[in-house]
Length: 418
Ligand SMILES: Cc1cc2nc3c(=O)[nH]c(=O)nc-3n(C[C@H](O)[C@H](O)[C@H](O)COP(=O)(O)OP(=O)(O)OC[C@H]3O[C@@H](n4cnc5c(N)ncnc54)[C@H](O)[C@@H]3O)c2cc1C
Image (cartoon, rainbow, N blue to C red):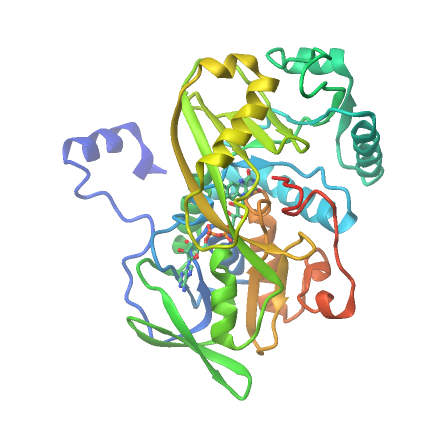
């Protein structure tokens, strides 16, 4: 704790931060580890942290090709919630939300979780009926969530245009009060510091170029810094999963698309909730800096680029301006994209692959940030015990062969859901 006292902060400021101790990294790369985690995003780092914390497995290296959190972890729109319809999705995301709720304390690192409420709008009777069914299903599973009629919605979200003669005549919403946002970079840094302090080695600028596989069992990886051997290799590279699977000699049932987000200039607090609208493919929330964070549907073509086209900005904003007319006077400040892997049933792919002791964590589409804690927790369980965790078992790769899909309309990329 002493490291973070006001006196220490002042001392470090006056010395130009030259003697500030490292939060992670700075260790020598060894030739052999028990576990190698490929990808230093939130999922890879959470896996490392829970391996050490829950199972005492610390002979672990995280190998990141760029910088920690520089992938989708640092590019997403930070929405967290657990109001999914199918039991497998809802239970996984609810466990994750519970981990989120204690994460700042557990990591001693402020991940700035703000449970400001998640509003999912409906603009037709059919949509209201579907949302009501979803709310009922969730409540039967003990997950909080309710339906707001127009009057209730107007109280929660006063800036929303609920007039009935507009392009989208809003009828009500599904509302999860515990949903909200968190600070995305902080999640990567918090897990990295926690893992590093428990003895896990973390290396940036250390991309994995290939796998070393003997008799269909992985035994290490090839990097620009040399070969590194390991008993288990976990691949957690989000939009690069298909490329990595090809190196290991198999194909994943995913396609990779760019997803774009954009932020406005900073405004005083005006949108207090996370508001999402599936029919118009748009969502919006306001960051603690005051910027409005917005996004919509993914780019229409496959690709490995981290930017998007202007047509997506135009479509998304035309929807959002209908919902929040004041937005027509707000300026967009910047835009960026991330590569997301979308599985064919919209649910993630977690665990074993055709190569022994080579595990994959992929296929999250637009939905993986909220899942970061549970994904790390369940993947650590799988590595340590050799068996999938009960919560991740439905997401095994083999479901695409045996037909036990987790096909939740609306959680995957078509239509979009965040
Ligand atoms: C615009 C956008 C908005 C989104 N909004 C939300 C949202 O609001 N809520 C939500 O729940 N989810 C959202 N998502 C999805 C979410 O961001 C991701 O599912 C999640 O962050 C994935 O985390 P990760 O750790 O698996 O991947 P990443 O953070 O991408 O980490 C993977 C890492 O692997 C590294 N890597 C790649 N190849 C190699 C290699 N060969 N060797 C070593 N390292 C490698 C990359 O550099 C990267 O740092 C959004 C995504 C985007 C793009």
